[in-house]
Image 1 (cartoon, rainbow, N blue to C red):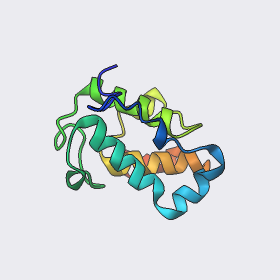
Image 2: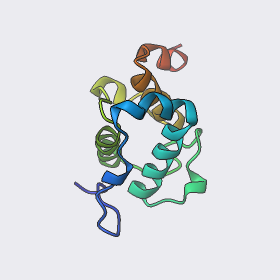
Image 3: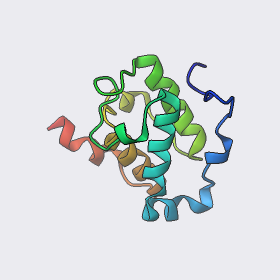
Image 4: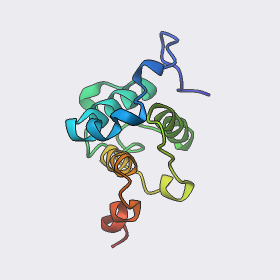
Length: 119
């Protein structure tokens, strides 16, 4: 898949978080750092341009295929995280994605994440 391997040919397995370290990762901000790093690597953008407010399409130029590839990579890197198809269209900013992953890691209800979008 396009975007799933960086320019060096690295398959990003070194980024994977195992299930034992996920909760600590959320507390320590590792999720945020890892997500921003993956976005920068997969979409070939500078880390400075990847903030919580960054919009995937408008700011990073990501099309639907880029976003699907990125979400697959995210699922691969965060053991147990599955991004539902219905939720994919609601994840429009980097912050939306980070909150979604943190909720999945902590087993929090995902519907609360999008209350602000739906209201």
